[in-house]
Amino acid sequence: MALIFLLQTFYYLAFGWPEKSLSKDIALITGGGNGLGRLLALRLCKMGTKVVIWDINKTGINKTVEMLNDLGGYCKGYVVDISKREEVYKAAEEVQRDVGDISVLINNAGVVSGFNLLDTPDHLIERSFNVNVMAHFWTTKAFLPKMIENENGHIVTIASMAGHVGINKLVDYSASKFAAVGFDEALRLELEVLGHNNIKTTCICPFFIQQTGMFDNVWARWVSTLNPNEVADRIITAIKRNEKLAIIPSFLRGLLILKWATPFRCTTAFLRCIVPDAAPHSRPEKSVLNATANATTITSKVDIMSTFKENLSPLTNASSLLMQRSSSLGERVL
Ligand SMILES: NC(=O)c1ccc[n+]([C@@H]2O[C@H](COP(=O)([O-])OP(=O)(O)OC[C@H]3O[C@@H](n4cnc5c(N)ncnc54)[C@H](O)[C@@H]3O)[C@@H](O)[C@H]2O)c1
Image 1: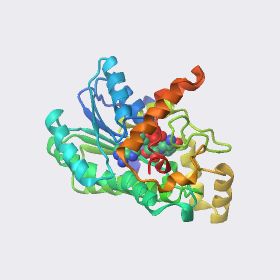
Image 2: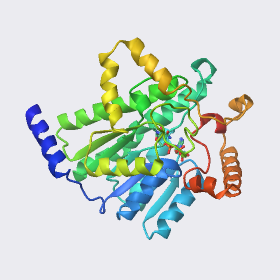
Image 3: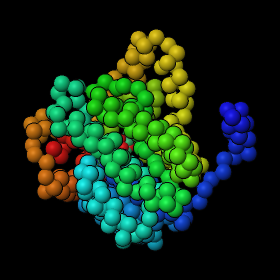
Image 4: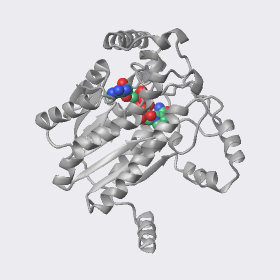
């Protein structure tokens, strides 16, 4: 069996990987109001896919919907806090009624705290898990039954390299991403065992990405931070090829083998060199940490950020496609 898969891989490497069309699909992207989610929405729209986006950021949703509509595509946005199970189930029913059966689910929304563990407030740790992994259970439970019934579906997990190696100051983030990687792997196996071979899963694990607002200015050595457009292109290719795991950049896959093959002190020394400080820079003062979350706070911060960005230099404005607000940074909105 292993030999057959190996031969198949060599065949594809030599003659090209088959790619499926997504033009008849309906895709739902969580966190589609900014960053990677928006870039994926744009690419799917250009291929003719109907796109549904969920986000907590209404301004970001409106912007994405507007951009996709301008391209002549179909996009509908919903304000959904995916960390709330009941909200997810209710919104899923609404989408089913308004748009139809979701065939591609992209669990993309994510948040980061970026503090040493003992400095991270409990509610931010809970939030990391609720958004970065628990929500995947709720969205999958909401949309998988129809995929099984229609014998067609694809569940995409946007995890991270931090879901394969632990990173300093990202204890809650890393732990939640390890869980997301496990979620994808176990779900794939379960679907195989149950004979649902038409339901595919893909796990995406990128290194740090520039300009999305989540890990801007992270201090990484030796491995360059990634261009968000290239990451989005790579994700679309992975989905079209039904790839199971996409590590971005791909050479890091080789380095992961070293994690298990070398003494652990070597791995930690390497990780400390490669990412000396993973905390997102330009964070607000600590006093914001204890502020209470509410929609008004989020919206007003979004508006301030948008106005601020619009007044910056053209070079900085180039990234405004991606960075409208910073709700992925828990400490900014909670
Ligand atoms: N940026 C990076 O360096 C990087 C690296 C590896 C993996 N990732 C992962 O890629 C994914 C996308 O990240 P990004 O860089 O585009 O970040 P981003 O902050 O630009 O986008 C995240 C989106 O998720 C939304 N969101 C946050 N909490 C939500 C909630 N409770 N309900 C609904 N939506 C919510 C935000 O409003 C935002 O629009 C995340 O899962 C992230 O962990 C990012």
